[in-house]
Amino acid sequence: MTEDLKFSARGRALVGQKMFAVLEQARRIETAGEKVYHLELGNPRLAPHPAMLSRTVQALVEREVGYTQSAGHPSLRQAIADLRARTWGHTVTEANVVISPANLIISQFLDLVCDPGDRVVFFTPAFPSYWAAAIHIGLKVESVPLDLATGYDLSDDAVDRALALAPKAIIVNSANNPTGAVYDRAQLERLAVECDRRGIWLLSDETYGEISFGRPFHTLGGLELPRLVVMSSFSKLFSVPGYRIGFLIAHPKVAEKFALSVSTLISCLPIFTQLGCVAALDHLDKYTEEVRHHCTVMTDWCSEALRKSQRLAFVPPKAGFYFFLDISACGLDDLSFSSMLLERHQTAVTPGSSFSPDMTGHIRIATCGAALDVHEGVRRVVALAESL
Image (cartoon, rainbow, N blue to C red; front, side, top):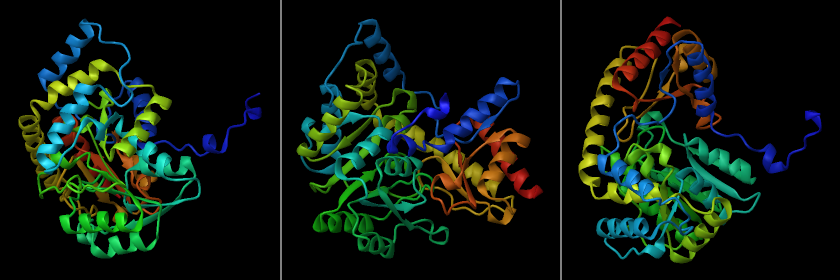
């Protein structure tokens, strides 16, 4: 009898990510024969660099399908270390680098530095996996809201409020998902230095940093602080979310703990995808230039299209490929708007409450799909907003 199934407290605390629930709903509609315009997931449709795919295939042909080190394949860790040492201006070695899926890194970070009941701070709106991981581990989440009126920038006041909460850990995300905001160096570095001074752990999620186009991106990687962990991902940068390859850079003693966590949870990641990523890094500058150009063009088009509705408020993103839309003037909450959009207009978006419980007047749209599909999906968002 299923009613006799008893799950643990952590099992009961699993919430997942709402955009994947939306994807499931959309797939059911597609199975029935209708086309759905997918704006719910950051699932880039740009072609990955040919060298990346060729090296992945070559590795498979050469039967590179066994285990490798839990911390990641040495060639990829060294390539990342060399790249970051050049751009950060200080020594980064293989011992600082661990390869792990970016989503998992979030859970690993909170699991390694926090105990159940500890306080963690997010600047909101915040990526859903931060919430899901914290809730699963049993942490007390405190949010510091950022404001549409100021472009969702990280202000001195927001930094002060976060520090005043005296949390065990803070997660900061610049360039930001879902807002596309890129934070100023001064506020980021003050946050990092004050966290170190006060013994607060800091995770800097820089997944979208290298696809910033509207404002200079500032990494925290130039600061050598023992409680600072900097993470990124190949998924968005090289349009390969299915590879599930992310990475973090941290003090060697911290990196050792992350490697043990990888060993415990997933043993290691596949060799063939990691070797593909090594090949991709040889083409990083040119490929990211193409990605930034594509994002700029899509952002400009979508901004113009969305402005045709008087009921949608937004700040054009300065990085990445998301718009965080204020739909409050439409008279529906995020779940009702999203459901109506999917059921009546065959367009999937992510409800704003995924990014903070108080964001029920918002939705997020992703503009990284096939251009014609994105254009049509955005038109349908505007059409629904204007019909209400």
